[in-house]
Image (cartoon, rainbow, N blue to C red; front, side):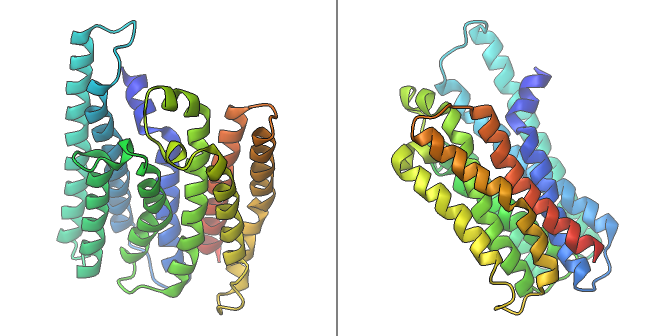
Length: 291
């Protein structure tokens, strides 16, 4: 059961949410603001718990609609649903406790509170009926905004209460890369999702439209990064992200080869897409933290 619960959270998302949150704090540090590590830790806990609760609530409401597995009795599935609900409430409680801790430390400003509320509403719309966007093919959009925009913004605003254009410049292309990553994750299960009438962003777009959209997302992300000098963004903190460009190019090439009938090495492609997004976020994070 523990293994199943960990799979539901998707460990790669645990790492990426922590990474992009740390990126936001790194931007604040680069801009000269001293970091409060207690606040950093409380915010990180809130982010990880909110992200996890979205997955657990989504699985809780989805489970009765799935066909019963061969090795599972109805009573076992109901018991598992109860565990899911308990863990969902526990993660939400931990997140709220962390936010209250931020309130006690007088870190929670009006703009930061509004951003936490927005993140919470996104979580509800992703996981809980009647919206439950994860089940109608738009969950990937929510997760991309989580990873690429909201989590870095929370990490930044917890250390600096005023928005900065460097944050916006960094998070926009990162959100595009996050969406490309999540779109690739849908490809291995495309046939099964179609058979079971399970809607994902890929089944909504269809294979034929999703591939050029995927390519465009990656292209526009790196093109936007390349505009740093024109937008008066220090090139020294942006150029390291282009070290991830070979991974992005290979990702585009490999998916295009599959579209032409090449070998469907889905595990390799999924890992490659995670590396493209994760390495881009990591290189930016590392640069902001060491400069």
